[in-house]
Image (tube, rainbow, N blue to C red; front, side, top):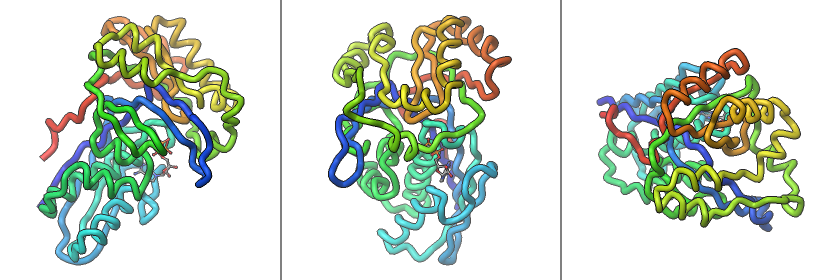
Length: 292
Ligand code: ATP
């Protein structure tokens, strides 16, 4: 049997760090949503006890270090499955980009294996297993729009934001999330985004308010280490974006644009300047159309 599952990327509409916890993690408050840029995970059932993994991208580990592999292993152990699976990841989401590509691959593997092995687990149960693999995996299991608290695993669902275009631009290099958090000084954060104001803007379907309340406390940290991030942001504003923010720990910067023609113009203007530019839709909800 064969299952194909979409693994969409996320963007942060807000990212706030409240404090550093005793367990070493940072206490976060974020508003995240799902965009129409996705990896594809193909899963083939194997009649013997083995997990195989391959990817179209040489930039991700092709062994047990891959988050999709870890997801399959965890689910097999939890549910005592003595079958195996062959996993193929067609990578579209840039790696180490602040778009949760690895977490989404893990989440899609959990959703796909739940169908392939007819486990009958709920999304809540899959999200609980996902939390053992990574902080963003529970959000990616639902791939919707939500406030995320704690390490990112405590989710309060929101309705999808009003539709708009999202222009993504990524500098050539990736960024290690751990490095950025390592450089962050929580007591030096000057401006905190308002999670509640962003949630209210989404609930009232107010595109302008969403644009006004974008904010990410990691942005100045990443910008000080990688000045290209600021340059891309400045260019996007100059070229007509309605609002611009870095996603996650970066380095991807996204622009929200209401009008398609302006979004297309922005993409064209950025192309000479930045190697990786994508034009996608903000989905806010998991699009299951092309899955089996
Ligand atoms: P995060 O903010 O959660 O660290 P990110 O979106 O910035 O994630 P990812 O694309 O998830 O970045 O990659 C982070 C690291 O995870 C990479 O260095 C990569 O080696 C590793 N990784 C493991 N599995 C995957 C996968 N399936 N896809 C992408 N990266 C993966």
